Image (cartoon, rainbow, N blue to C red; front, side, top):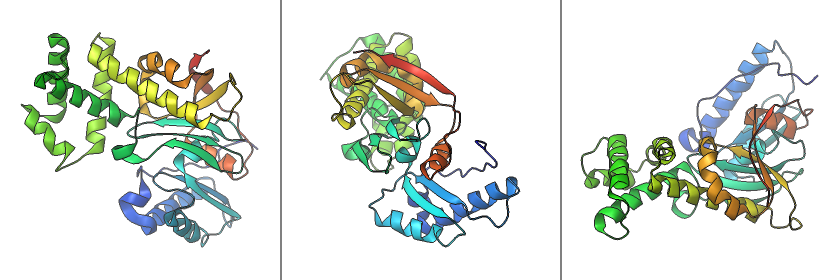
Length: 296
């Protein structure tokens, strides 16, 4: 039967980095036990599919976590990156997923769990199109305006300054340096994305430009992982992450960046359902929202 029998949640977004492999194993074990208990299942040997942020299949961390999970009663254990699991939420054969949250990445995931990747390399060399990139870009735009390097409309600069200073609780530009350097906080910088979207929709050109650039970068990542397709081939793309809530602001850049017909899909289920499909569960009936369709 295509039914969810049990449900449990861990609140850690990146288990292996925040609590280590042993801590991740303990957290996943608790979730599995809670889920089986809520489903009134005993003496089970479940198929365990785990999609965990911050690990890769060829990473020793992944192998270590896999080996620990194999100590639990099981029929099969598969551990992958969270992007791989997300690809199976809409299609039992995998497909294309583009993550745009605090960070970003795009992957084309094949049925055998191998994949092509673009992005996903962290905030120093990657994360294009992410909430972090939008926030950092607007901070840079404000600095460049005040330094006279690239001047924007003064009214728009004032709006940007009020937003940035209010978000960080500071009174001048020097106050921004701590979260950027000595007390770096990627999530805090990414937090600028939501108020920036409101500014963009209200007509602030600097904020709108930041989202247009984010859309272009996300489109280019999608184009990169699908570069082996015949020209003009349409693709469905699973869109994961909070930045996609501003798809209207991303579209002006996304169209040029992706350069092919795509539908951006937001499934009604979480990555956990994709994990179950990944290890052999029947594909459930999933409500899918089409965020946008691009015809190129």
